[in-house]
Amino acid sequence: MILHHSTWPAVEAYLRKSSGIIVPMGSTEQHGPTGLIGTDSITAQTVAWAIGTHCGALVGPTLSLGPAQFNLGFPGTVSLRPSTLTRVIVDYVLSLASQGFRHFYFLNGHGGNLAPAQCAFQEIHAERSLASHARAAVHFRLRSWWDYPEAHALRQQLYGLGEGMHATPSELAITRALLPDACPPDELPPPPVLEPDFMKRHGGDNHDDAQAHRSRFPDGRVGSHSGLGLAEHGTQLVALAAQAGARDYAAFLAGEEGA
Ligand code: NI
Image 1 (tube, rainbow, N blue to C red):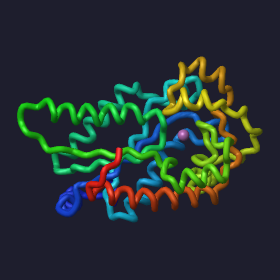
Image 2: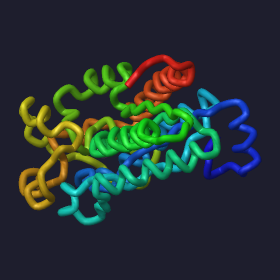
Image 3: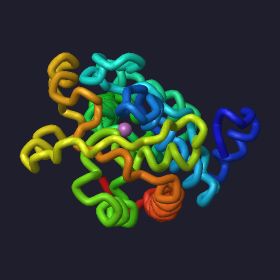
Image 4: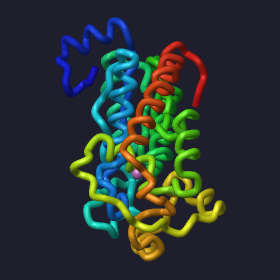
């Protein structure tokens, strides 16, 4: 069930049986010479919609802008400040919480969203903890589609170190499965393999400024051999992530612990 495709009486009826909602989060940024600028939003929304279908869960509007300042040197990138995304998430959650939603499952497709999202969750918890009057508790879970163990294992098996960090073959494979006519052919050579220390320090898109980023990664890929990502891999990755996500969402609604 997709919020944008629903009426308010349908949402009111949904709330009588569930307090959960899935929120896809992506970005709008360059994804190398052959990757679509909407890759992170397209992938997150696709997996979220598939989880929603498995679980009969409502899926909210996709947050399709995220912090991507490091990619502003590439045309087409649109970035939010991290603090802006945090505020957007707070307002998104509190809007729905005011109507009775209590379980917010964020399905993420962009590393740079992780820290601002966690910050937003803490802001909301803090408002409740600091309030002098009682407010309903809300619950959060944040997952990136590539972190589900089955999806992670397939990425490792298919691409190894060629997965890299940005414009990854796995995310491009998903867009190639969904939008074959929009995706140009990819015969690019592999970019230099990233050092483990670099990957550790720059996890969650913790990159430097746009000028430094483009000069270090001139074609926009960060260690990712994008051409390895075939459409059939994308179909498999979405199916695995959606199955794992559906189990995880059900566990979340049942009150099982999980960060
Ligand atoms: Ni991406």
